[in-house]
Image 1 (cartoon, rainbow, N blue to C red):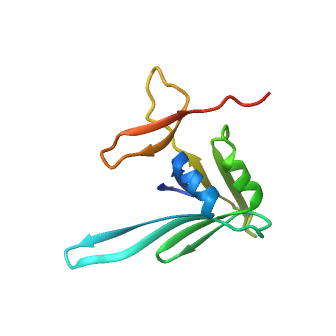
Image 2: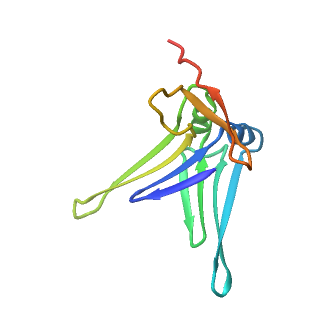
Image 3: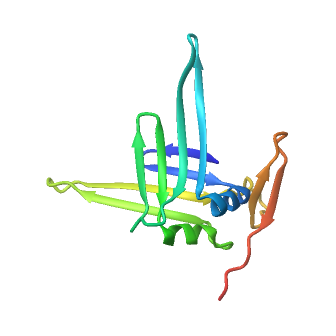
Length: 141
């Protein structure tokens, strides 16, 4: 799982293998630890978890972690083979009338773009960097 934080959005990119693991366990968690001149720095964790009793998906932030909790409807959307992912959009208008927007996304990863791009999801990436992919199923009409 990869994470990208940009402006007012957080994007989790997952492989199909990770989607299968999420379907089985309800949890995907990764972490990274910085190393500085003084040794190990703080551990930063990021995760996507299933909350079966949540009315809607939500994002929790702490000093050293980001957790996206998916409700049942969003979990089911992510598990659909032809869906790219789940998009949680939030907007809030301050009492002064200023609009604030935020998005959290969980998307299935794709191989890098090429001119002759096949429609595929990344299934897994080996430690050596080899990419194993699967075709994206056609949507039912």
